[in-house]
Length: 543
Image (cartoon, rainbow, N blue to C red; front, side, top):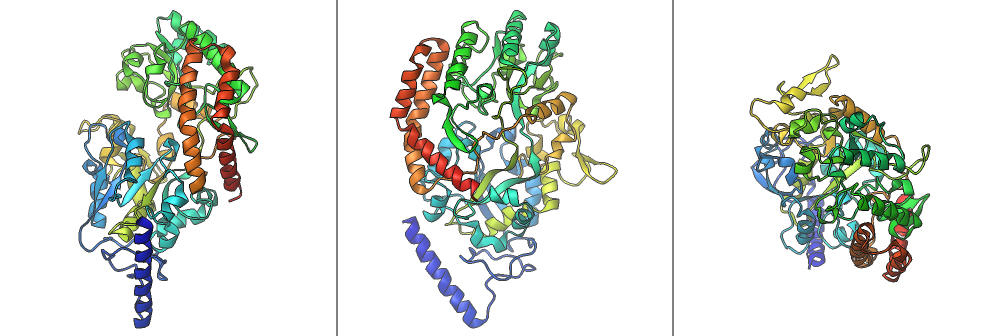
């Protein structure tokens, strides 16, 4: 049905264009005129915009925006409570109706979008959370859900200017067939990974220990943490691993798919995974990590705050901004609480691991509904957010001298004091939602770096000091047929692997059964899934 509607729409547009040519009319308004409220033409107009005309619409219009960032709101109820968003509406004459799925329900809510006949005008998708149409990006365009942004380049001067200046960024924003699934969140320079393993520096100091490097160092450290009365020396996800493979990296394996010199592998069927499980089984039996790990929910950076704030967690995965003494401000009871990031552990000092959180060029992507009544305005509105000055406001707050200061060169420096003690009493977690915008589509990484506390700076450098060349690129794409087959195969395998990981670690399943475990996975079709990932990686490398 969607394909049929799209085809009819294209025929109608083509007939309109023929009529316009016959009458000598322009296909679009000039850059100096306010945009109309009609959807844009299927082919790019000749008089492409050189800058965003403001207001974008002569009359106030409303766009719907699916925004899976509920955790970024803090105590606020909507991004419309924020000053930046309010100013943006005033400039553009575009009101945004934010559709915010409940925290933790994002993936399921995303999949339900494709079962509805009412796709939001703009849909923000996190690729690292596997938010992508089941049959792949190209299929989402071909099936009539989203538009190929290449066909509307004329309405996105800021975004395409940025991509023209950053060819590596541009490569990561294309599908294998050269289509543009939407506008990606971009960084003005590569963003060093923002999360990783962190340990309690104050605990290390009490024990007289250096920061751990090897697995043996970790073993001694965790035993030391336990001797201090820490009930959960190490905190992990429910499958006994970490999202970015930090704990297994030293064994040369990931918890899922990874690549080694361009060859795709699946970690759980490799011998290194058995080594990892053997170590975790030993640590679990000695009470060195969370005895209730299998019941935990959320990502690896989601931690039980009651345990953490009462000195009962010694090591876990967290964000750069939460290192140093940040958790004291968040509610930790111990005023000496100090956290520092460390590199992924390795077998022997001098070994190099190849898996960690990636340094980012592009992140989430915003796609535009092919059935939007205000498609042109939606593209123009989102594109305006890539305008340098507007992006600065989104990052640092409005140019009124409150949320940032200027250095001698005129560069904005986020005000640490205002962030944590603003006159309206907004919490640090809601600060950006109130005064700026959390994770805007064009980001300047130095906004954080400029105000890092000492151990925050050390943490980022530690996490970024090892390579991540075995990571699978987040921006590889599958064909429609591949996507369907891959999803069918991996759904059952993922469930089986997670269940067995827990059993191996807790001892309810003997590690002598590991070979049988591998054979079962192979019987479930893992080799076919690896072949699909390999083909996608090869296409990505050939872009």
